[in-house]
Image (cartoon, rainbow, N blue to C red):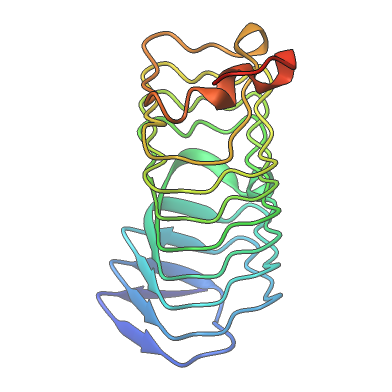
Length: 184
């Protein structure tokens, strides 16, 4: 297993199994790559395609994904110890974060269609300008989560913990639409 520190890695389609510390990955296409047992610490992925990667026991410790495509990833397979990620201008459709600790996670201008957040801890998470169409929130901790600029979400308050969560007047429909009522 290799160890790389403070490297810029561009235009790759494969990676050698190892520990990557403070590395930046730019314009890489890692579609369906097996990242089992890889370690990423304080890394950044910029304009990369990581769709359908295999993250079995992969460590994502303070990893930023910017302008990335991350479709169909089962993050529940990754190593949950010190798991910390952020997403900006990225597509995460059909991903699963089931039961993960996502406290303070930022989703900035992201597509989160049909993402599974069941039983996650999303306390103080921010969904800034993100689309949550068909995202699943069941038994999810959303205390102090920020949904002010999020759109297309549907959250049932009786099935989730929402203490001090923040919503805009425009987005409040996402909390009541399952009651089949009309708001004018």
